[in-house]
Image (cartoon, rainbow, N blue to C red; front, side, top):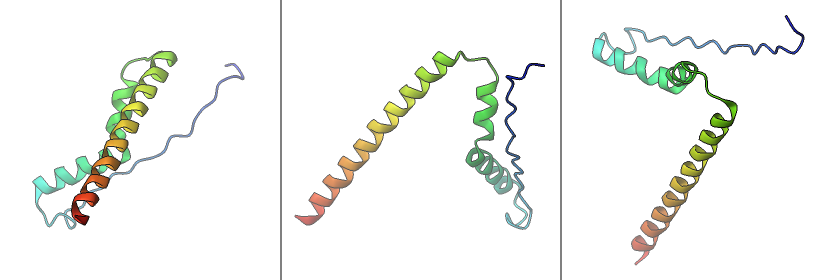
Length: 89
């Protein structure tokens, strides 16, 4: 083992859904479980680690995602401004 290895501590994600919080409804329990796993980004991590991705490809994808996020946020701001302008008329 070389000295250049860095071991990152894993964040433990305990996703618990109790019968009490869903009032015994199994469909509601499943939906709540899925929602909690999405919030913890567990599924995203599994999908991401399924295949090796070159660092350059990962950077490219991250840049693309950030650009989409910026555009979406800008559109949200514009729509909110337009809505305020219509309301003030």
